[in-house]
Image 1 (tube, rainbow, N blue to C red):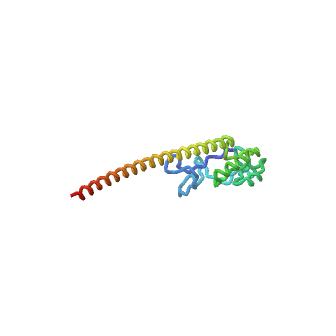
Image 2 (image 1 turned 90 degrees about the vertical axis):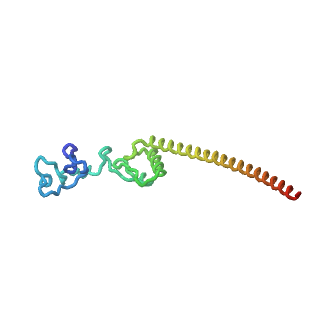
Image 3 (image 1 turned 90 degrees about the horizontal axis):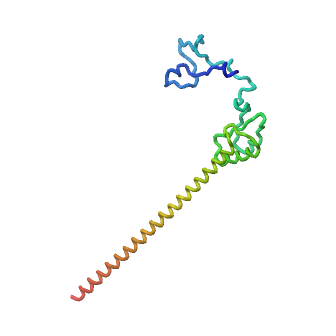
Length: 180
């Protein structure tokens, strides 16, 4: 079905009331003109608006059948003439990078990844940035640790000096008390 002939199926009243969201809901009112299919009211979805079997599940942009891919083995089984791979939502970053590199060598394009080179470059930059941040953090920790150690050493020195002074004073008192 041509897109011009297919009306936008939105919930009745969703354009007037903010609390009503756009997705289609069937009109159930007893006197609802939309439910009764009166002329001049919005159309309800029905069988006649469906797409042809040949193009029903094809992606409009690529006109290819989407296939969810989660491993490299699945990517290699994709027939690029009639199918286009989509990276699964549950795929992690490591495997996504591996899939992107494999697709680049095979010359395959993903439906949900526009530019493979830009994606790989962005990931490399992000990794480099994280590595730099972690190095900076470890350097900060080392500097802080050195400062803490230095302060602790100074404190120990002061305590030793105070202990020596106290010891000397006690010795002097003992000498004075023995003499009397």
